[in-house]
Image (cartoon, rainbow, N blue to C red; front, top):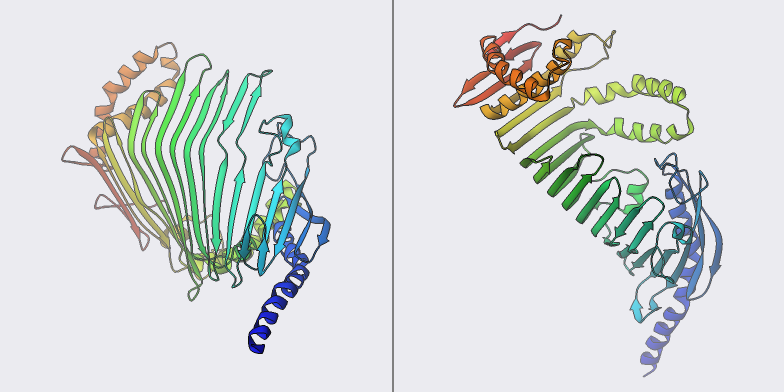
Length: 470
């Protein structure tokens, strides 16, 4: 019986005493977050009020940001060039947390931005915060977060501009060795006398090794990110109506860190199921770019260098950039970097085109005496590029090129667009035959092809050696 009471006493003591210990860590946790925020370009933050309690604490954090550094124009809701916002926060201390119910955890954070200054232009329900963030930290290091931006509208009668925003919702998880996050927007619509812009069903997600705070501090981890958009519509109404409709866009980025070799590999993939612009349809668009073997030493040096750029004027930035690359470019080149376009393709009404291009710098142990020397760079470049066009697509591309040249010719200044298009259509077949005769392109199975390679300072075009400019 005594043992039972002893265990009960220990549990009660833990429940009563541990929250006070946790409350003493609140200040240091906030300081850590603020340090990370202050390291980001354009932001600064400080605690202006902190009330520490036994079971909960609360306070205010002032965040100041430079609109110029963040690319914001004069039409922002703030009149100041460096506005301030106040974030209210409440922390609830574990191990037993009493909020809406009873929960078990280490500490729960609730952060809100009321956003009253934004109400001069945006409309949303009263007594509702513009932004809310909740972070629930477990007893063993894991954490869950949820954040949201309130749905809002804009109805500016003076400019006849209207905005409808469905709101934003996101959620994430932090484990001992991985962070994940996903968010979504159902719709954002902007309309005015000049036209319309609308996006629908936007979804983003990311996963990353390591901790989110470490990533904010510039550490690089294996990670992946995905952005998808079901709909993008742009309609301009100036004079003649022109529209762009895009369906099923996907953009994916994967980053792989090779700690042993101190290299970074980045893969970017973009696909669009269908896009229609000015009554012209393109489908199955793909663009895959791989940036491989990038020196981790170079990237870390550039991260440190970039932190100082916001404090420099344009001339100082140019001068310091030249100094940085003189001191660090060799580490990048020694890693034998690659830039590969592994897939560039699409289907047009006239047919399909497919292309790839693999490129790498190799064998560079010292910078050239003359950086502009083409011989140095060509002798250290390995390249393999291939392009294949359905003949209808080739006719389209060459026709557009010919039209652009004819429009610059003074002799065609008085011709109508239809007359210029007719002349271009007549000249394109001769242009294609001329390029074939010179060996620039080949024709096979009603397709035009081009294959270029460069290795050991020797270039080949469609199997034939070609001279280089040195």
